[in-house]
Amino acid sequence: MDKKLVIIPTYNEKENIEKIIRFTFSLGDYHILIIEDNSPDGTADIVRRLIGEYPDRLFMEERTGKLGLGTAYIHGFKWALEHQYDYIFEMDADFSHDPYDLERLYKACSVDGADAAVGSRYCNGVNVLNWPMSRLLMSYYGSTYVRLITGLPVRDTTAGFICYKADTLRAIDFSKIHHVGYGFQIEMKFTVWKLKFKIQEVSIIFKDRTEGTSKMSKGIFSEAIFGVIGLKIRSWFRKWERLG
Image (cartoon, rainbow, N blue to C red; front, side, top):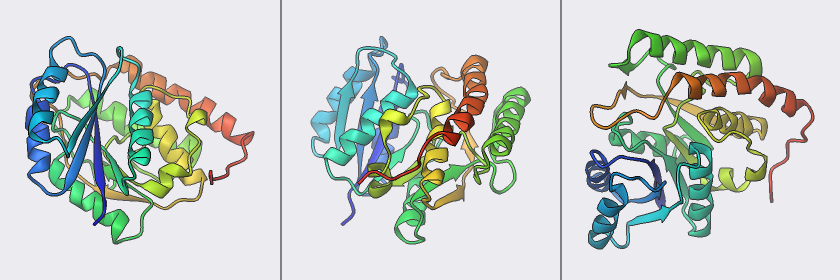
């Protein structure tokens, strides 16, 4: 049986964390790793209590503070590979990503042959609910801009709902991933593509959170978009080889 790990980074998610953990576990044989960045609202305490109920399925790595989304996921990827998981997922804690779609992403990799499956808001029209128009336009046209600059054949370049095969992550030199904010999502997809892995987009419906506070800001998104030029320039001088 395939070992499947869902990585969920958290900072101040006390309203959502117990619900997302219990709901995900109700869907099948998933394990969850929480990357907890020292939330002052008691998120870690909730997770510790739940670990007592799910000692073989729920795990937590605690960090000293907000160190960035990219470093959280890389920490989780390394942990997953050390613990010999076969499929590793990225998912938000706030239900903007529907846990029911985990199985669709898994199938894209395990059955359809993708090396990475992206839960895409934009590969089948625009499937985003409850976002203000300004944020939707920034996201949609930001992804268009990334495709134009990089050539990356992914319509939702900043998507954060992803399934990776373990072999895909093993092939990546994480020391060469520079972005730590939302640009990390672009850089990971770009790296997977440049290493000639197969990326498949799976159409999802993205729903804005109803509880807790969003961590997205215009500054974070702008950093990701403007960092794309540097990503493209660096790619000209890099030899793209898989590790191992």
